[in-house]
Image 1 (tube, helix red, strand yellow):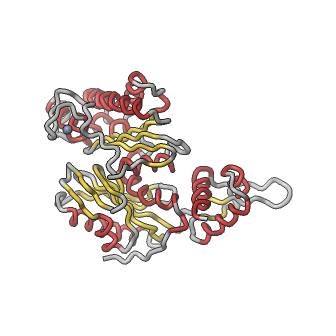
Image 2 (cartoon, protein in one colour):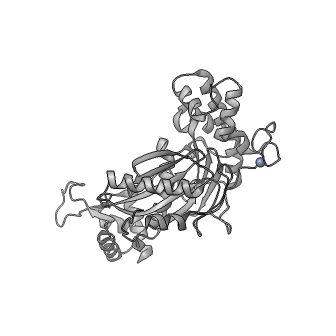
Image 3 (cartoon, helix red, strand yellow):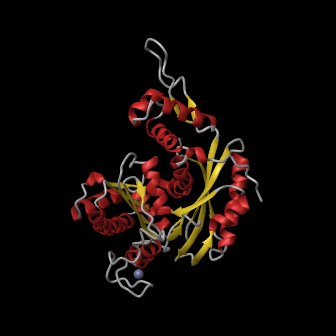
Length: 386
Ligand SMILES: [Zn+2]
């Protein structure tokens, strides 16, 4: 029943509003099995009938379509970045209802960072969506994250090691908490709600202050026995002239991370402060130097992505990077570079589907991935607060 419910809810997510008979035809399930799963999902408040969605023109019994019910539940999310956390509430279609940015006051203190974010989320929920039941809390971060234990094993730029995030935040909020790497969470988000819907294989490259990747094959995200899959930070795919903190030269992260690239642009006189946000804002405002600088970054990222693409041969490559997110020139340069340097066709190279919401979607997707995998397992917890 659980597997059937997952297939039904996934089909409704992709195709809804959709008639039950069409779900059966699309999924290959029996009409009786679809009817039973729909009843169970409706009972849980995950599915609802939408009689007005399709005008009835036929003869005989009308097929009332069903859709994902976004009116009853929300998913809470926390994304932890180098300088700030993003807190969010998203609906069951992965749409960001609200998000806030909270600068870290003590980035090296995980307890402080995480409890501050959780407390602000509690207030945000009470202020904005008090009638929506929170299904759970998703936490996403860069670096090495172990979803099984709910632990951030290592986050180099924050200096975090073996932080038991799920245990800490479950105690703080009373919600079920799941933790994953933002690269993996966004790969699933692209499959569930984004441009990679229905694709079986996907390579996702995340370029922020941390640079890491996620690999999806046969519809499943590959974690590896240590949950460390996708660590591309120190592959020699960057500028050989750049020395990395690990002692080697040419590491990808040391070349293209937000901090490294902003520092380089600052030294070159392109931007007044070493801030990637300033650089992108200048480019969006029309600065030719800032734009050219970010196009160059997109090309360096593209050359690295081309090597990874040929190694894995996925259906699609998705790149999350602030320049390609906000500037069409950067997205075009990335696409050109990957297509020129690999077997990928240009239309297999996609910028992130989530624009400025990307970090919030990453956090929400950690929980939504679990919901769509096993929807009958949801609890309807009461947010116990602090
Ligand atoms: Zn290195």
